[in-house]
Length: 156
Image (cartoon, rainbow, N blue to C red; front, side, top):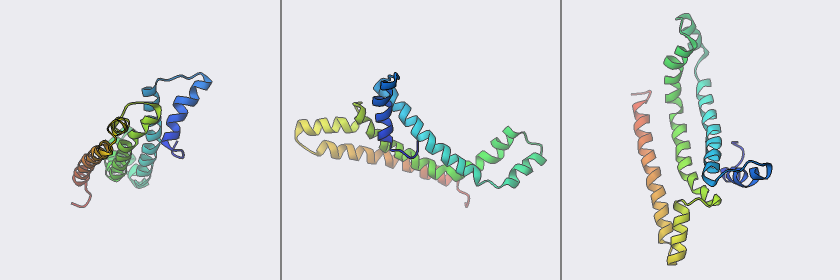
């Protein structure tokens, strides 16, 4: 899933799957494509974060008679969260930007609305406004990311 573009996945799920008998409406097809694509990225991010935890911590948890669930809950996840937070927010920012790809399925979104308005008014102002809205959304995610990263900072 990570090796192919999201736009290709959207087109495949909506236009190709019906040829083998799997028919989906536009919105469910888009949701499935986004979930599959981003689940693959998030799984890889968390896998990498978990692999950075030294094996000695697992052994220490066994010595302290932690259950596997408690080991993950109290030892592994708090450390992994700090490690993966920047990568997770990077993917969230990509997700916000990638939502503009749903126009390929004919789903009304900000880009489609701005393009329609630009064609109707013979002006590029609606496209600039759409870009400004995306910039504001990414700015908000960036602010939240910085606050959370500061809260979980190792070195304070």
